Length: 574
Image 1 (tube, rainbow, N blue to C red):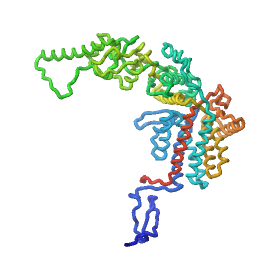
Image 2: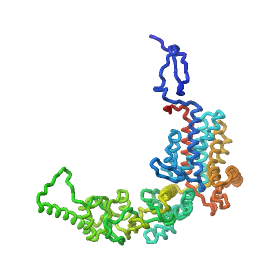
Image 3: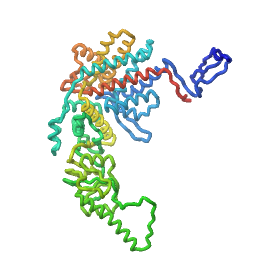
Image 4: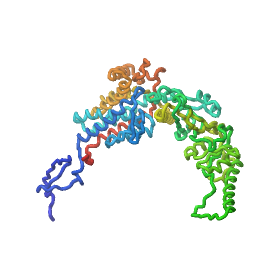
């Protein structure tokens, strides 16, 4: 048996022009380690970790100026010329089209926060960037990336524990709202059973958006919408039951909550009545057309009599369809498909208003709200499958011919709509994104009714708690804990900087007061009301505990993942 143990030793490793390692045997013959290695780039060790940190910091810095009530907006233009103006972190990163793989991790991080919590997408990216920035200093001092990651993990647990200690709790109930739910005047329900802390938390979310000047009105609309569709026994909210509709033109203050459904449609015939009261609604998913055979067919018509007979047969089909609808007692027909002019004419003459081409999602919401059953065939249309609405009216806007149908006074308010107005399309779209964040916050508070105080107060309290624990940790991990504590200060620093304050001076003063007074509710006074106490009546800045915990978890996880990468093999740019 031949021994090959020494055949390839000693190996000579040489650096190629493409930054890859080539291996040679003792006779100088190269052999392949990685396929197409001349077309690949490779970065190893500490250089790889630092390259990744630089990429993550670059993405994080983009969002840092958008944090807080005084944060700036970003204007993004898509390849086809559409312009978006927003300061929502998830939207900005989605539209930026980040190419770097580590940058994409931060985009995914922001998206995870958006899908799970709905708010805090900017904060989580800024925090992850800060954690990596402070880890870079420790790497320069010679600490192993894994020891830093372990320190971060310990610090995250300390921060979560501190958040749970300082969290406040309030009750979400509808004791007064249940009685007012069926009343015509929505203000009864709005005054009774609407927890103020819920409104204040939604206002905190909206204060950093373009709609900040109307935050009280919009926050109340969001809370009312969520409490309308909330299942408080299961502590769950299905946001699909809240429809966000918008029309440009009009003022932001004209936005309203509709106790029913908005349909971006009009009555099928211009002579049909524009307002219906106490109306029974039939919802059909079958077209107002004669039935078509499923097989290939051909009709030969060679005389006027045959043509007349065919036309009479079609007329009869339409008459039967309209008669079935009329006999069921329906006062409004909502159809998923279009219908023939003949059918439209017959419906109008039989005093049966109709709406056509209503989408599947809208039909389901309409059925939920009115209590109607969706009917797939005319033969199955019976009085017990009809829904009920107090009013159905067609509303026009301005000098344009835009119209919408408003279905109000439904049997149950299990489906509601928020109608947004704004000066232009961009403001309407940004308002809808802002309202979605506020709706998510209200939903999270129904699920978990604990809150922490904003303005960087929670982050500074956690930072002080971690620094206290760091002194008791004997190993190298204490450096990781201290770095985590320093990294948390990026939130209050960014808030102060964006508000035009001196960041270091402001944060140092508030942290000293927190430590001295043992008051974890002290934060940055971004809006200049004269007090740093976030629980004060003048500030009232709340955030959800579940959202804040998720931010810390996600930022720590993505930081650990990036620190553990020590070798990058990627296709060369050339």
